[in-house]
Length: 75
Image (cartoon, rainbow, N blue to C red):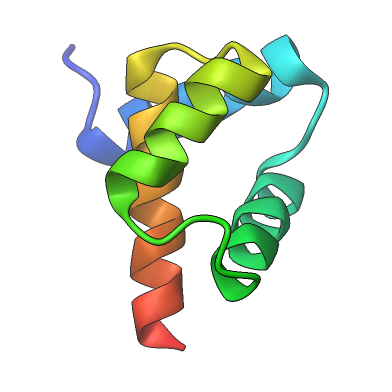
C-alpha cells in the first residue's frame, strides 16, 4: 500500500531527527530565530543554509524550509 503524504512527511522528519540528533520543534525554533534576526529571508535561503551548514539533503532541507515558512506566515 502506498504511503499517504502525511506518512511520507513523518518519515522525512524521523530521518532528519536521526541524521542530525535535532528534533523537528528544535529545527523550527532555529529557523525561526534566523528568520527573525534577518539572517534568512526566503525559502531558498533556508534550504541553502540547511544544506551548507548542516549537511542536509535537498529534500529534507526543502521540507523544513517549507514548514518553517508556513509557520512564520501563520504567525
